[in-house]
Image 1 (cartoon, helix red, strand yellow):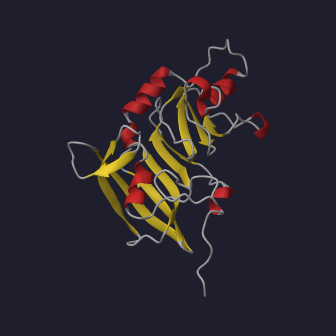
Image 2 (cartoon, one colour):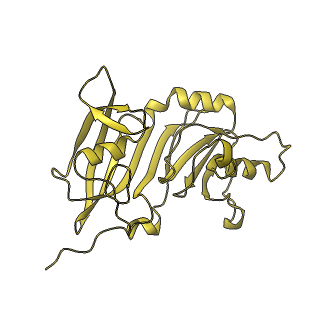
Image 3 (cartoon, helix red, strand yellow):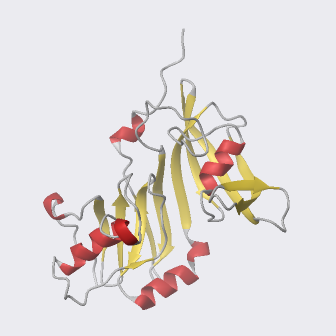
Length: 235
């Protein structure tokens, strides 16, 4: 079945831009500030709830469903995949390690060397804060490839490739190196002139759960993200 065209902007679900949809999957560009999925009081203000309303066309008795495949942090924008059947969800999650995941991040500082791989064992404490350890018995091996795209003043734009997919992995790894993500008040600097976290899920490549065809989706980077670059170097 050929992909459906994305609906006009006035019919887009709240906080989401439809990048692709067919009978098995929906790929969206999530806005920063929107939870992927939630419970309790957050349930009605999530990407999942917004997309459910979209596929059900406002009719809550509809049998149409969407299923969460993976998540993005509330403050991270970009490409996010949902399944339209439980079978598609199961297939995607079973093969998720084979998905190519590329992010963009604006960081504090100028990374040196300009490209490399960050590796550590990540563990989460009782306060739900993730941190690195050298003890493989405590944490899970986590690896992130990075490359400097451009330097802008005292900040740099990085392209990041996730080799593993742990909670807060990119944020912790970059903070460990002394290059915290701009706007990251949890793992970085509490700079108040940035209204969002400068982390964006830019590209996803994966095999379609039904026909096995390799698909690649790119989520456009928000204008607000580009404006978070630092001032040019003083002459």
